[in-house]
Image (cartoon, rainbow, N blue to C red; front, side):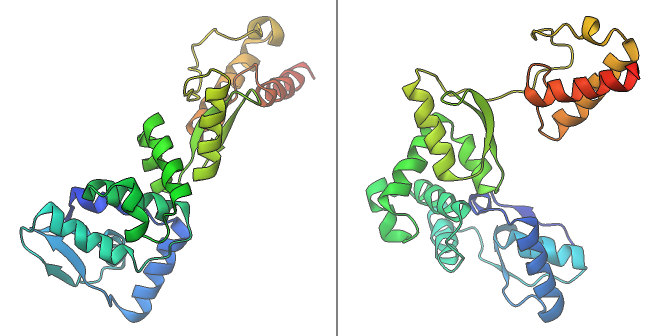
Length: 242
């Protein structure tokens, strides 16, 4: 099957969760592809998940070529198709907001296009976008943003509009700018614990940093000053001292 590329506007639509994608793929496997994929000048503007499912199943893709239509016309089509989707998720609300922004629709008029966008959500999403518009991309893909919460003095993951908005708003009250939590590099010495003295064993210290690396890839913070980091270090120390 010829590989189709994505039109930039197709990326305004939310990403399926793995569970949702498997449901779509199973449905196409049983019934076939009932809804054609829409192309603009040979690139997908709507149906990228259907395309991926057909590709993985080895099915021939049913598509409809719309030609070299304008961005304005393409957005009209994408918005119309989005209206038929499930609207209860935060990703769907962010999707609607981003589509309206791309279309040039004012915040005050967005709820007239998408009922899922009430003024409360529009204000919160707009606030998040001003802090860092990339956060909306994270929510659109149904992932999480890792931030420092100044009120509780800890790092947390946020995957909802309300949670992310509340923390960003709260950080402002504490005089904090947006603080993204970046895992400490392995070579960093900006920690209070003297690990070399603490372990007293080069092999133990090496094992700790090996685990630190693995955890960092998975998005877990094993910095030696965190409660989890201290617990792991304690277990390793006990292992090598016993």
